[in-house]
Amino acid sequence: MMRRILISAVALLVVAGVAAALSLISPMRRPAPAAVDLPRAAKLTCSLPGDVVVEGEGTPTVTPVAGGDSVDAAPGTAVAASTPVNVRADGDIAAGVVVAGTPRLFAPCASPTTTGVLLIDDPATAELLLTNADAAEASVDLRLIGPDGELSPVGSRGIAIAPGVTRPVALSILAPEGPVAVVYSTSHGRVAAVARNVEGRAARVVTPTDLREEHLIAGVPAGASSVKLLVTNPTENRVNVTTTAMGPGGSYEPASTTGLTLAPMTSQIVDVTADLSGEASTLRVVGDGELGASVITQVGTGAPTTLTDSASVTDLMGAAPSGATLQLTNPGTAAATVQTSEPGGEARTPVTIPAGATLAVESTARLRVTSETPLVGAMVVAGDEGAVVVPLAPAAGTPASPGTTVLDPELR
Picture 1: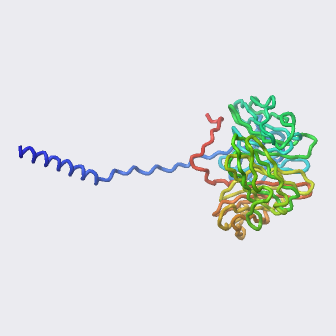
Picture 2: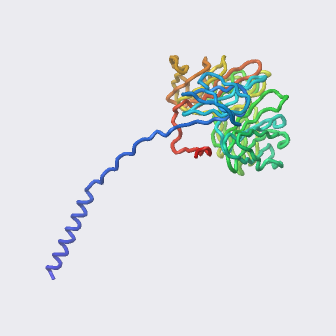
Picture 3: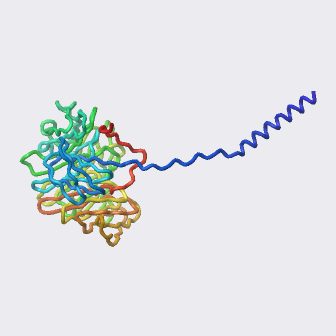
C-alpha cells in the first residue's frame, strides 16, 4: 500500500515538473508581416464645364464622363472642358473647375459617393446636377429638409441616371422656400452632386458635405460683407450646436450662435456677419449628434460663395487663380510652425500660427503647406465681383485613415 502511495506521489511530482518546465519555454515568434504599399489611384468627377485645374504628383488625365479621348493635365496647367469630366491619377490629387461667367467661380471636383448633403439658402434659383461617372446605372433618392420639417415632393425618389449622364433636377419645384438641405443617397451606383444657379441668375455653385458631429469650414475672406451659417439636422433627435470662430486674434464663440439648437428634421440659417467683424476666419461647428453645415459668404456686391468642410492634415496643397491670398488656420491647442513653398521651388521662411488662430499670408498660384500640427486652409481671391475660394486638399502621399476603404464599382 505504501509503495503505491509513493509511486503515485512521484508520478505527480514528475508531471508537475514537466508542466513547470514546459511553461518556461518561450513560443517561437512568428516573423513580422512584410509591409505592402498598396497602389493608390484617384478618380475625381468635375460636374461643371470650365477650366479644369489639377494639382498633385505625376500626370493626371482628364476624360469626358460621356466618353471620349483623354487629355494629360500637368500640375499647374488648365484643361478646357465643355462637359463633365473625370480626372484620374495614380496617386492623390486635388482638382477643381474655374467656371466661366460673372462672377468667376471655383468648383472643387470630388469623388463620386453614395450619399451626401447640399445646403442651399434659396432653392427657388437653384438646380441640382447629378452626374453618373461610372459604367453602371445609378438610382438616387432625395430627402429635402426645410425650416419647418421634411418635405415629401413628388419625383424625389428613384431618380434613374444612365452611365455617363448628368441629370438636372429643378429645386424650385421640389422646395418652395429655403433654407433647405438636400440629402441624397443611392440605392445602387454612386453619383457626383453639385447645385448651381439656374440660367439667368448670377453664377453660383454649391458643393456637397457630409453628415458628421464636427465641421471645420475654412476660407471666410477678410472684408466679407455677409457671412451666414447654414446648418441642418436630418435626424429624429434634437441636436445642440456649438460654434467657434477662429480669426487672427484667436478663437471665440460668435454671440449669434449661442444656444443654437436644431429641432428634428429642420434646417436653419444664422447671420454671423457682425460677430466676425470682417476678419479672415474659419468656423468650427460641433453638434451632440450628426448634422450638416456650410457657410455662405459674400464680398461686396458679388455673388455669394458657399464653403464646406476643409481637410485637416499636416500636408496640404492647392492651385488657384493669380492674386490669391493664403488663409491658414490652426485648429489645435498648441502653436504650429508652418512651412510654405511652391511645388519644386524653394521653401519660404517658416511662420508660426497660434492655437485657434487664422493667419493670412501671400500666396503663389501653386502651393504646398507642411506642418507638424494639422491645419486647414484656403486660397482666396477677393474682388469687386465676389470671392473665389479654393480649399486646400491633402497633398499627394498624405497617409489615409487606417482601415478606411472605398468600393469602386468600376473594379473588375
